[in-house]
Amino acid sequence: MNRVLILIAGAIAGSVLVAAAFAEQQHRPYNEIMKDVASAFASLKKSLDANSAAAAAADAAKLQALFTETEAFWAPFETKDAMNFAKSAGDAAAAVSAAAKNNNVKTAQSSYAVIQKNCANCHFAHREETGKGFLIKP
Image (cartoon, rainbow, N blue to C red):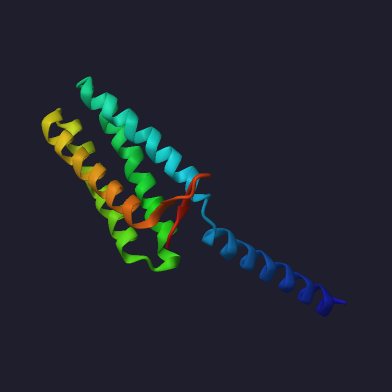
């Protein structure tokens, strides 16, 4: 009886570990990530144009997290350039946040342009218009 309980407990524990590992590898859909990036990016532009440093810092911090999520999305495909674009955009978002926190909007705007350039390069390389939406090309 005890042996059966130990086997059942072991099987349950193993199932939980497998499920946890599988869940850890799951990412939310890419189109959701990109919609959040677009929204945060537009908000950042408005914040910078309004010279609202605190709002710009918050928007940039959100973008930094989203670009980390974007980089993680591309990692399983081993798409180095897309991962690098996401990392560079995330680094630029961190620079925007730091500059905004120091109330240096001009420097923040320069780093904003770096984000924009990395997004455009990734879209050019890995996004295709299909007439019904976009196709992501790993």
